Image (cartoon, rainbow, N blue to C red; front, top):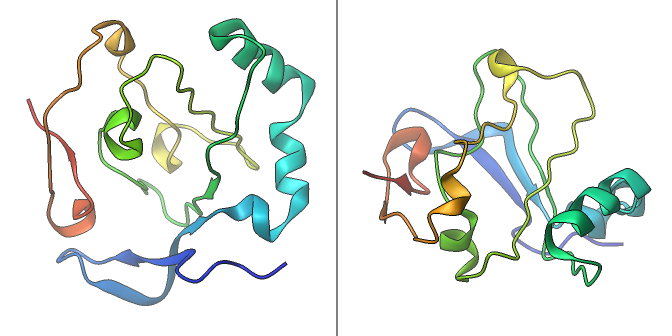
Length: 137
């Protein structure tokens, strides 16, 4: 299956300019390889999502972020509702790691309890490697 135009994006340098040949993200990766969709259908993943929002699950999107260097990051601090343009408590983000991961090589980090405020935090455009934006307090 062909990857949609614009699905691949390059990593930004310190000024936010794309680095030639350095992959940052593949949007819609499940369209490229159905084996990735199979990971999202694993019973343990579905069960955990069902316990949060119930059995009516719709996969909104899929992304692949390669983490190639220590201290790598794919995005700044944000709330998914800001990026998805929604205001619902029924959005679940799930990360499926294909290799061992920790704070040093780019694992998902969550602010405990931040999902309970019911409010969207103010977001602003960032600069450099965070040019796509992140939240501000």
